[in-house]
Structures are given as C-alpha cells and as structure tokens.
Image (tube, rainbow, N blue to C red):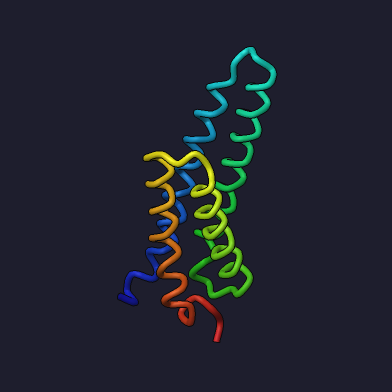
Length: 116
C-alpha cells in the first residue's frame, strides 16, 4: 500500500482539474440578473481558488513539508464539510468521495508524508 503514496498527488491534480471545469461552468452561467450574477461570480472565484490550493498540495505533498501536509488536510476537510452542509446531490456526493479518497492516505500514512 505504501507504493500508492506517490500517487496521492495525482488525486489532488484530478480534483483541481474538476474544480477548474466547475469554475468555468459557473462563469458561463452568469445571467443578466445582478443578484444571480454576483453569486455565480463568487462561486467561480471560490472554486478556482480551491483548485489553486489543490494544485499546490499536489505539487508539494510528496516533498515531506509539514506545512503543506497540514494545509492539504485542512483543505480536504473543509471541502468535505462544506459540501455536506450545502444542497447535497450526486455531484456533491462524488466530490466528497474524491476528497475522502484523497484524505484517507494522508491520515493513514501520516508519518510517510511528514518529515522525520
């Protein structure tokens, strides 16, 4: 199972790609109504920011940097909690499962990700 640890970064990249597509989709849904326009812009910016955070985690998680490890755990935990407490549908379920699948190896193999 420890051979799968280097592949954890790829899960961050997959999540970042999904978030970029969702962000672009939110930008495309901007309509003429100013109230809805602001909401979609905020959603798109937040998803794009989350994608950048995931990209940073994916690039540096295997370098055994303590702050990146804890940043990754916090970002994944927030993604899970915030997705659960929103309107929950199939897309949210799949996003939560992807974040859980990424978070489990980080927690189980914590000593391999943290500096000795």
